[in-house]
Length: 174
Image (cartoon, rainbow, N blue to C red):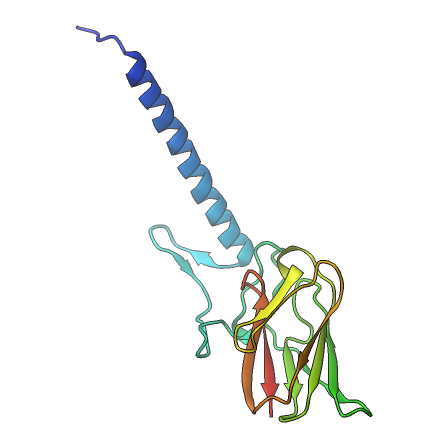
């Protein structure tokens, strides 16, 4: 039986290979943990089975939103919670949206052609930002409540989400 001596270069290579293997194992373990916390089913050898996206923007609708993995398993309610804005004496429709782990309401009803103001309560974590590609806004909610002012919108459905695009809502203009 002949033994070969390990050179310094071989030892360095083995050390880096072991570290790389540990990093990969940690990454995949944390990925599976995040999927489990979000409620997605994972079958060995396949990817996650998530709710199918809806709408032209590719964002999931409020009724399809999965629970937010970073905010806890019960966040990101998939149950539609409707809220209609009320028109004030100055002719502006206003509504306030709670951001405690999900949007409440997550379906906002507005009248077409009437200016609107939507106030999002202060939030942290992945709910610390609110954005809409459809309406072109992005607001940081970590420093306090923010009001989004919208000119009279045309009839249609507009999507919004948290900054991580894990919790969704809709603005339905009729």
